[in-house]
Every structure is written in structure tokens, then in C-alpha cells.
Image 1 (cartoon, rainbow, N blue to C red):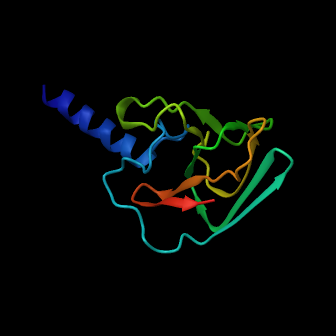
Image 2: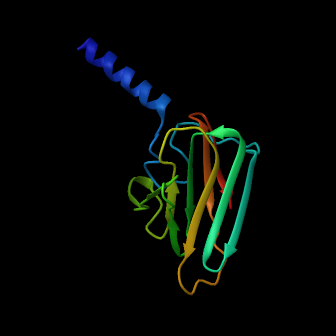
Amino acid sequence: MKIVIVVLTFLSLLAESQGYGSGAPLCVDKPRHGYDPQETDPGLDIKKSITGDVVDIQISSKEPFKGFLLTTLSPGEFVLDEPANALKIECSGLQGSKGREYRAVTHNDPEQKTSLALKFKQAEGSELEPFFSLAIVREFKTFWTNIIV
């Protein structure tokens, strides 16, 4: 019985240190890491340009980061290039996730990143400029949320 407890403890610590290398598991406002988000400037250079119905989002940072989650309420969909540097995730409203009216993309690998290039195609007839909310994770305890793009 003691060995089972030791193994389970080790696995839980390993999971915490590794994070979600294949992306955020849920479409949420902030990572559920058990820590508060940073209140300092994350040091990101964010550029958003709109050409027709396509929104190009460029995010760069001098400090590498491991993960991100970009969400929007704007009608449309994220368009992933091949090979994709992101993964679409479903916002279902389950387990505290944002509801189905949201769209989201997250990282798809555990590698350090210093830049992102993402595209969003607005729904036909959309008249309002789309806005996005970004969460960036540098380390398990170091992350920023509600960065408006």
C-alpha cells in the first residue's frame, strides 16, 4: 500500500512539473495551477491586423513561454496553417469552461516559444472588430491572463 501512495505522489508531482504539453485542457479564463496570475507587464509585442475578413495576430516575446490560450466571443473561426503551431479546443461550458459561444486555440507542444502567428476568419457579415483574450504561461507558477488583443 505504501508503494502505491509513493507512486501516485510521484506521478502527481511529475504532472505538475510537466504541465499540459499538448495544450490547455479546458477553455478557461486562467490556468488552474493553484496560483494567481502575474500582475506585471508580460513583455509581449502584440500586433493585430485585419485584411478583409481575416485577422492576423502576431505575438512575440524576448522571454520564452511554454503555453498560451487565446479565446474570443467574436463570430468566426481560427484558421490553422500546416504544420499548425496551435490546436483548436472546444469551449463546452462543462467543468467551468467557457460556453459554446466562445472559440479558442492553445499550444500543441511543450516546447519553449518566443513567437506565435495565428489567424482568425471572421464570420460572413461580421461588422465589429474582433477582440481576443490571451493567457500566456512561462512556467507553472508564472502566467498572465486577460491580455486583450
